[in-house]
Image (cartoon, rainbow, N blue to C red; front, side, top):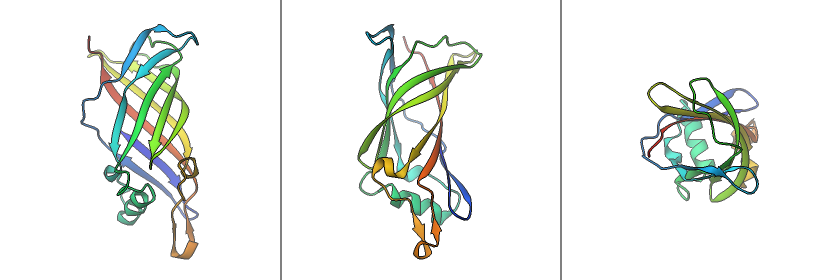
Length: 166
């Protein structure tokens, strides 16, 4: 799940990609690099078309702003974590580095993850990151001749479920 929370000068909105059914592989090394972090590789590719803002006009505006016709996918590339997680039922906070690619522009972000593993071995990886439309050379949507303005700032929440494959 990915949810984008934003504001306009008249209200708040949330746009969600509710599910992701692809089987992708994200690898995580068990040894530390010279910088002391844990290397990761792999990515998640999400369809911009799958964003749903509940309001049809807002959904259409977001997809247009994200240049869905030119760039139908956006990517989250996993790069590293500060350390290997304990993988216990109790939540653990770990910092990681990801690259987000949106509308053909890549940008690095340090993410604060919350990681836990349930009794069935399903790992939950969640977090929140502030991004800006301008980070990706995009203009925040405006309507009615600029009377309705969307803020450049967005809060992106995500939740990924995965499992260990040996």
